[in-house]
Image 1 (cartoon, one colour):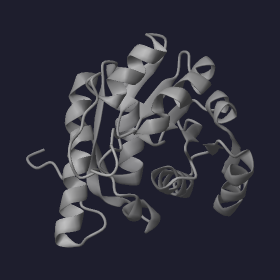
Image 2 (cartoon, one colour):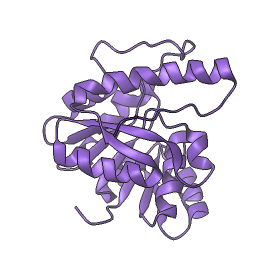
Image 3 (cartoon, helix red, strand yellow):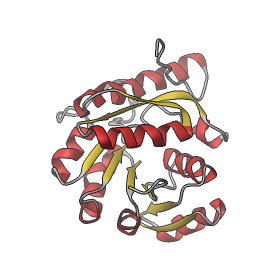
Image 4 (cartoon, helix red, strand yellow):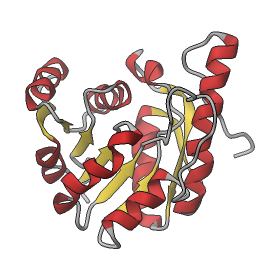
Length: 213
């Protein structure tokens, strides 16, 4: 993988995807914004400067070294199927949280265990699935600078996990390895807990920090 891989963000005009795009381009990474609306993706990429360009979802996945999936859970399976031909041999970072509206502050994990595990089964062993960025408030990313939180990173592929830990450290305090992909269920569930904390304490970006390291 290149020292600074090209990052494709599927759902790159959404809250999390656009925040990650801003943070990575500010750090000197090339980013390809993917969207169901290429026009919307290109317009947003134009706001980010020369390091960004816009495309449809499949085009963004094809042009990238590392692909980040940041779409609503309702679109998870269909979007994976759409971009699957462009993912073989690449790292797919699944940042999707299985929220079930309207009770998004209640943990409701899917029957498949977690969104990331579902993605790995759907994509097969030829795609290196990593799970990360579930607990990073988009408002922190849009504020500029590194998000004041840690990012838990999970994968069955240690090399891929380490690569995403490095990318996480660019946009937040630290990326921290959380173990195998099955452990992603903990971070995905924690998102609902953080949403509940945001509502209870009237804040917009509750996050996590791991102590003792």
